[in-house]
Length: 452
Ligand SMILES: Cc1ncc(COP(=O)(O)O)c(C=O)c1O
Image 1: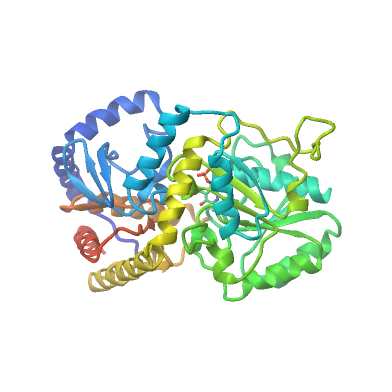
Image 2: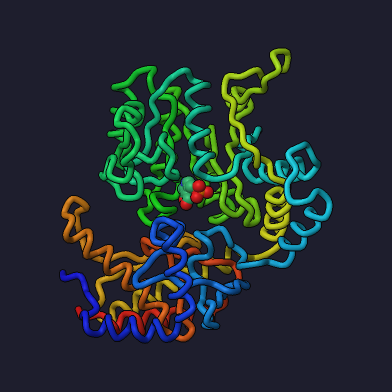
């Protein structure tokens, strides 16, 4: 099937309309491009042609750009703002903490204990925690802890699974089978100790483990599937991996940076009834302030050491960081977890995600756009409903172009809708039925721009 395109003359007309509507964003983007790479944005998730919006205000499920146009935010800071932008209780707790400690304090304070109790309560597999600043740091550290604890070097990951951009795990990330495609700048020999195996193939995983006796430190995976469920795992696969790793004395690392506190309070582990040996968390468990967490069994986590030779824990893994255990992340995390414990966010957000998926699929079907939406709980995705191979670069680029055009087209409605790339949407607990209907309307209008 052909990948739909917006004819060039029509695209140029749409760009003129967009420039009129977002003149201030255009000007700011010209400035940003002079200083910030890539193309004046933070990464591919916030870039789209002809230029991205600059935001003036963010509240609840809405963002307003610098020209005063409102949008329904289905991107939500890459999933960080699960209860919407600027939630009052989180903001108040952070403000009170600032009054007390200032903006940062890297000495011990009580909030750390309260926050850690909450995390360990909802993630019973995490008896001890090491707190860092991002999910990317957490997964890198998890691999280091697994290697130090087992005395082995190889980590097995699932093809396409994303664990950040670090030089330890970014091999074969984002798109299954791409190997080192996204890792230029990292020496090839860095990957000697990583093996990427296809997801859902338990026999293949078993064979890899058996072929490398006493060499595998851990298996790491996104437990809801690549991109937090954009390519879901087969029912029962995670349990099989748990059994296999236990039987072969290999650690299991669940990267719950995206699924943690999102698919359920206790993340994928609660839903699946599985305990990982090591868990990575991040995103909104700092209430919007950067945070990353590695949690695990007491004995495993005891490899994280201090520099006091007489202390219980002396080495051999020394993660550090001027911002670790940041008091504002502790405050924000406590406030958001309390809110999630009391509210009905998971159920509401999942219902809204299902409504959105249904609406997008109907609009795509009616307008003969080969696009298919799906959701894994609140995480929602759309992708081209055609098979293409990443090695066929022309088709892969046409698919990427289509995706960029959808993101652009969604901004042209009133209100428009903001989504992430590639086709990722994080549905927050405060989106209403009406918001979703408006978002579906924006998808319908967007699909009408394409020639199939
Ligand atoms: C599953 C997963 N792991 C790790 C990361 C990296 O986290 P961060 O962006 O906080 O570095 C992400 C980010 O999207 C993620 O989704």
